Length: 210
Image (cartoon, rainbow, N blue to C red; front, side, top):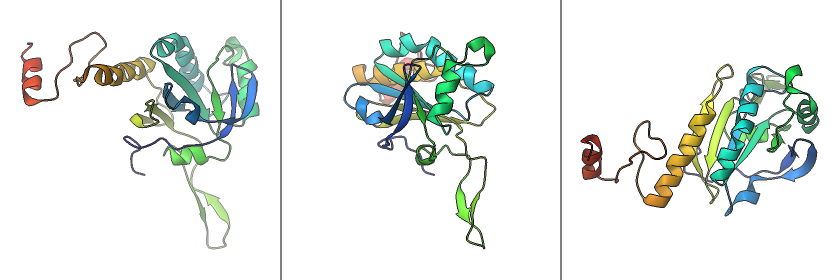
């Protein structure tokens, strides 16, 4: 599948659990267009092991995202009832109680497929029976979507590899610095550090420490 970077994020409406316990049936990222940036991330399954570390890490840094006008939204192929049950379970029992950002239920697997993070696909065999080629859950995809609804950054990890929330914040800072200052951000750039003009002279000045 071709990259989504530079393109409009796929639109959808789906059930989601918000504020840790309320199920709504028509959640959409379109509500943020013109208002907020979005970090939209996928994880494989509820009630697993690496996944709660990621979901809780995003919650721990939620204030940092909100300070940058970023909405954090999670998604997996589990049902909204599964999300709700996991959200009610205390952390010391393997749950994710305390998470307040929305978690989308991609039960049809169409959202994961449209974002290019579904681990398998369906096809018809010689008997015209529907067959799945994989486990049909989501890879650990993460997408930074700007206020116009355009994907500006995409990262997809295989199932065993957890993500860095700090890196997600760094990428938000880099995008916002570019939008506000017209300067591009070099390798390993962090907020508050020197960026550079998008020109040969700008690169030369940056590399020479000017």
